[in-house]
Image 1 (tube, rainbow, N blue to C red):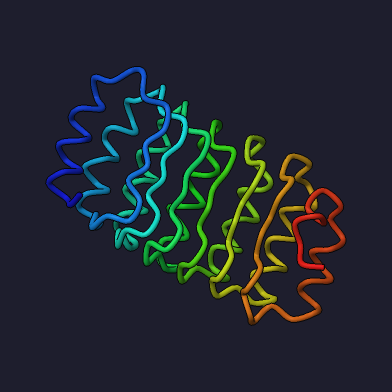
Image 2 (cartoon, rainbow, N blue to C red):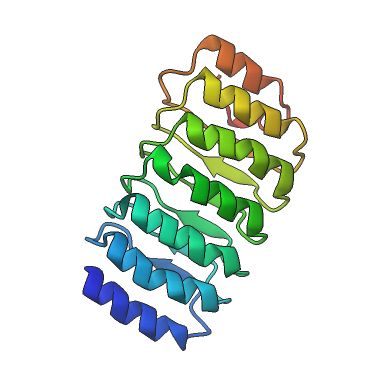
Length: 190
């Protein structure tokens, strides 16, 4: 599947009200293809799981998806692992997560995200009461990003899983700070 296929798929899904899961992982969809699919996300309320992983959508693609999810009221699970996303997209990701009230699980593993997203998650965790799980494995978080996340966790009782494993710049100080939060403690490395 490529960008042209993504455009065709998006047009088809405008009319579809039965599809619950869409897995388009491991294709050659770039930011342009993600932009085509974002219009579908604004209008489709039946799709519950979207798996976009291992597509080179980069920052432009995740920004388009985030824009579509600001209006979406049905998606519960979003996989955007290994999609070449950097901290430059942190603002739009954070804004979407503050607005969207249906997304419960987001997977952003194996990207180039870091402390800027950590700062955004402070606000997200203060406002969002739907998110149950955030996965951020194999990114570029440091203790600075962890400190920001901890500020948000202080007022959040909904989040049950925060996976930041394999962010090798998080020191024992950062891990110790996260371990104080009982609601996510089971998801931390032992």
